[in-house]
Length: 329
View 1: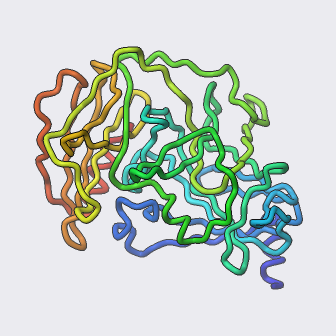
View 2: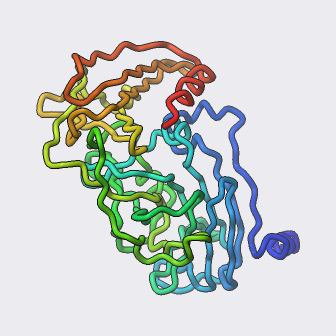
């Protein structure tokens, strides 16, 4: 208890440690690929934590509550994982889409809080935590929350869901799926967005803090207008089952979006709602044993592509990470 109090004093009411795996490749394709950073705060006091890659999170006194809406008063464990780099997004199996349309991302975090009993804390909607994402503030970006649909796709929405008492098992079920998804954008994207992100605090010269109404998956994104005529891009392969441990995604470099795949009426893989002429990269990953993966990467221009038939290449973890890092977008 004394050591915790000392840490809280030294780190502005927050202490941290890092949870890492000596063999991160075991988690490739999962959000667990990125290390989880651990902080301990006193929720009765104003606290601010800063994660390794620049995410800042403020916890005003009383900003965390239990399932009954009562303020939490005991030391609280804060867990943060950051996903800003392109390779981290891909290696963690993450995607960006809202109601079947691509959204432009600046990065995302997984933020959760637990009391000593293991019960998940919730954000106080009347006095919520606030987050400042790494990087320079840009017009139109705002907070999106991730929710898993019945199809297994994580859909991102600016609407916060109603708070519920979520267990750690429930938390796992809300993480982005490794397979499935939706849409994309045009050869020249015309963006329409609000002049200022709603509900933010800060200035253009300093960090912008957004209220966090839901803990869990939090994305810094903005909506884009893609044009009226949209088409689909299909893959000559059946939609994979969960047992196949295979994921298909479509990278849209010009807007930094990663779309998961859908299945059509014939159980074939398809990426719908794409603007003709857009340059994309098809990225597919399939586990092959304990320490090997099969990867398929193919550039494609929407509406001009020939038949896209997967051609798998067997690679080890280091080669896989290197290939994915080369897809920087």
